[in-house]
Amino acid sequence: MAPLSISPDHPVVVLTGAGISKESGLSTFRDKDGIWSSVRIEDVATPEAFQRNPDAVHDFYNKRRRLLTEQHVEPNAAHYALVKLELAWPGGILVVTQNVDSLHEQAGSQNLIHMHGRHREARCNACDHVVAWKGDMSTEDVCEGCGERGGLRPNVVWFGETPMDMDLIEEALLGCGLFVSIGTSGNVYPAAGFVELVRKTHARAVELNLEPSQGAARFDITRYGPATEVVPAFVDDLIASLE
Image (cartoon, rainbow, N blue to C red):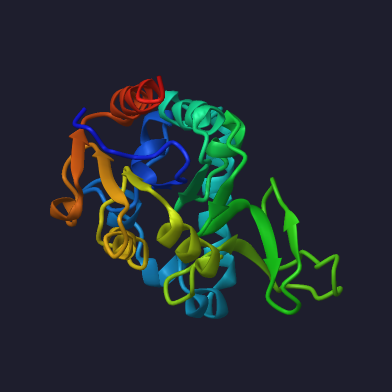
């Protein structure tokens, strides 16, 4: 790996997308055979879709939630490598994930932001109360916060909604010494713009991906291949630079 000239005291921010979970058995969204190739976004992933046909939206997310359990989806080597980096890097590491699965938590990541929410949580449209949720969800469910029936929805960010914790994410990006993008397509904003934000500072930017993203030219270093190979190798190189 080319020298990064990163002080160990500088924080690292890692952005992860569907590519890091693909090798755990979860489908990506934007590949040619991904989820959005067979399901219309407008039917299942917008506030308007939930207003129009909440049963169809619940059915889509119930199937996704069941998949995590029935297929015994587990973290892979890339998830565990980021935990290894979190334990070793003196300046600290923040993982910002676009994924709504819980594989980072299962692997042991502690400093984590789910900018697109979590599959296994429900949020009430009436009072914004959030609660852990592992089973199916329906319009018959009652919010334990306000008692409203029919307003519970998956606690995920739909198209047209603002991602979560953007203020914290922007602050971390502007203060980091290294930004690493893993398994993202580079065409979904605001995450696709993170590398541009980092380039306004003296931070370095690295892309680890199966293939070049749309924004690959903006990164200082790029490595391509399966996440379970390129992420552990990069983490080992970065930790070795501490010696």
